[in-house]
Length: 171
Image 1 (cartoon, rainbow, N blue to C red):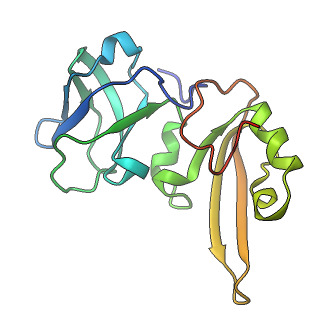
Image 2: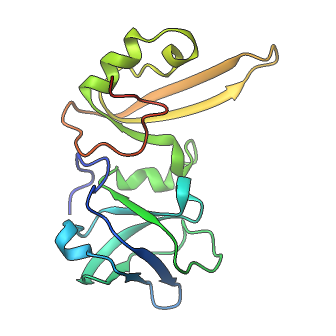
């Protein structure tokens, strides 16, 4: 199991998931976990914008079932029939109190170049380097948008673009 990979998103995901907290199991409905290539160490994010949190995949049992290492980064709310995404983002970021689940992005070289060339508020999101990037936004006391970015893992080979084009457009 690698500490991180280069997939920002597994593009061939289908179905919805239900979490069995007591048994550390995620059951899918019309999912294809095996076919999609999900593996031990990948991070599953549950709900739009990680509404219900994230968990590290401990094993893939079948097309419709995976085991997770812990539920400590899930909300604790009942999760049934919910959309999900999976990435190879750094596992240690789940324990990083500096970033929320929706504040870490896989940014490829093209997204980095586009962000650097942008104007206005979009330019504020320019990462220093392609790779796994943490982004925090806030409004300062003068009402101006401020963006803090940190390259967590530098790397130019991020693939499988996630739904992050609002922050990091491809063109």
